[in-house]
Image (cartoon, rainbow, N blue to C red):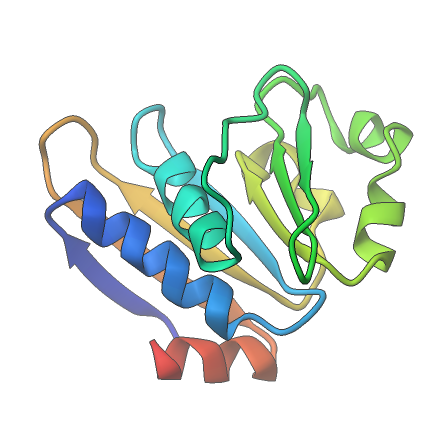
Length: 149
């Protein structure tokens, strides 16, 4: 059950992130795919706003930013990782066990480490172009989430 949206403005991407964060179950996982400038971090910023954050920055150089929201938000950027082993070496399993929301940019870099139950979001487009956003749920909870959206 896949669903595709066309978003014309950055504010729409941020609003989608807010709606997703509000609908995600505790322990929810979102795998984000898209080229540089597609809007992955904008979507994450919207999710952070829904949880009460004023600012969310890209964790490109730190790999993960942890935010003390309720539930906690773990924002990963796997762009600089060579493989899944590097992700596990930094304590990835501990993040999965903590029951927070995980948003992972560049999830294709560590596809073997992604949980089976998750929401995949592929964003196509950049610059001033509209974005095609494809939502693909994996698991019943995520199918319900996509239906709600």
